[in-house]
Image (cartoon, rainbow over all chains, first blue to last red; front, side):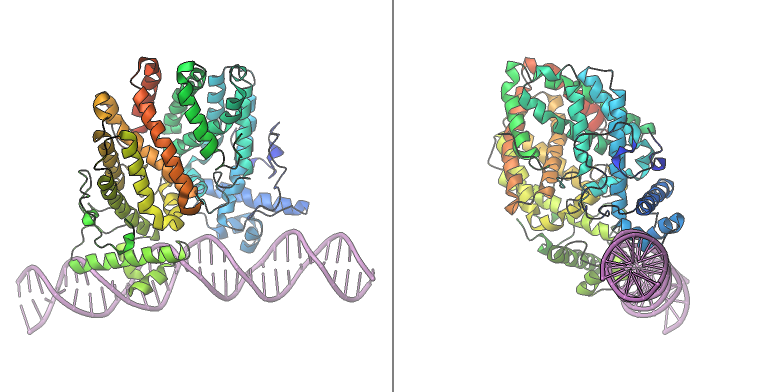
Length: 267
Length: 267
DNA sequence: GAACGCAGTTGAACATGTTCAGGCAGAACC
DNA sequence: GGTTCTGCCTGAACATGTTCAACTGCGTTC
């Protein structure tokens, strides 16, 4: 669940059974920044080597303190070569984040395989993220910063085709579909919820980034507290009294949240 | 309501009647980055000159494209001098953001002076923010990025003593207190809500930053839609059926949100 | 097998944020 | 009046992200 930098293969399929339907193969078509279409095996190796070296140094010294020169030297390549594979320092974060997302999805699916209670499944999925990301808490601030930049193609918010987000949303679809709750809800809601749950994760991530407690215990507690509540809200949404509110909320999500993250509203 | 860069005076009292109780005088004590205690009048002028030049250039060319050398040259000072007042380029954003917050509070109070309907007051407050920030939408990404960095003292989330946040929260306390809704709610909720409303603003800001529509029309629509809904939720919270959920929500906020932004939970 | 093309690679040059040793002027102190 | 101190200011030097013209080696073409 950890030691991510040591796992090999840049593509998402490294982890066991992580083939989320929406996860694109390897690098996908010409993402700005990363190279498109790795041509040779050697190329792939060099890319991985640079990424892993960078991850290691980021962990050791933090993001700002790690210079591109240091990464290049440590990896035994030239600075220019590092830029050949990652057109900016930022994109190293992208490479890292993509990997982490795939690993998270795999780990979460594993862990919740034998649980059908929705709240539990959700908690497992979120906790799994915290565990996967734990080794990188120190420099996490940095990729959070980057994610918050709309002009950057790294942002999971603005960039519709962000593969990492697709993978994560798919995971949350599983969280819901594999639970005893799903059949009880109307189809429309089932369609909406995965994205909302992904937003829940984003909130947790935000909380986590700012969390300075030992082992991010506070965030873990936040997850333990917020997941049953989320489950309860979803559950209650079935009752008549809550109809108007639910309708409002649905409308808000359909009209304003989903389109923003690149989905056409369900008509 | 706009043309912020042209208004004078670095302190928050430039706008009319912006004296929010919690707003500290001028620069406060030794904020890292800005200088502490402006000693002379000339000093204050130079600082303002640099800040205003920077704001203008940021608007004209964007944040990244504006170099510190350009700012210095344009302002007729040396690079070193700019760094004397703002210890990093980032801190220029801080200076800007502080000002904008004060101006926003003043403008919002003005606009909602004659309205007692809670939803309307909230909508006015949020729309006022959008208007105040409008001229800076282009480079807003940047200060949002900065705000998202927990290691930076600029973050309104992590830095408890952030004067801008205090000012904003105070504004939302007014939004509530000046409405017909406040007397109907229990004291505890009234205590909690201003911070929650501030979070609402933060969500709007997040939305706004990523909004690429003309005149950020989409965000404005989002405000129009979400404020009555927020009002309705708060209103309904008084009824018995919603008690358990409200209690959960309160607990979550008290235990996890408020402490994080530097308030001790109400016992 | 010679010419060519192109992915991969290099390192020096460049741009820009940041630092620093010092200079200048006015106030304070003797 | 001279000395010293200190706030304000300077610009060259430095650190680091990024670019680019050129080089290498391997496969393809003729």
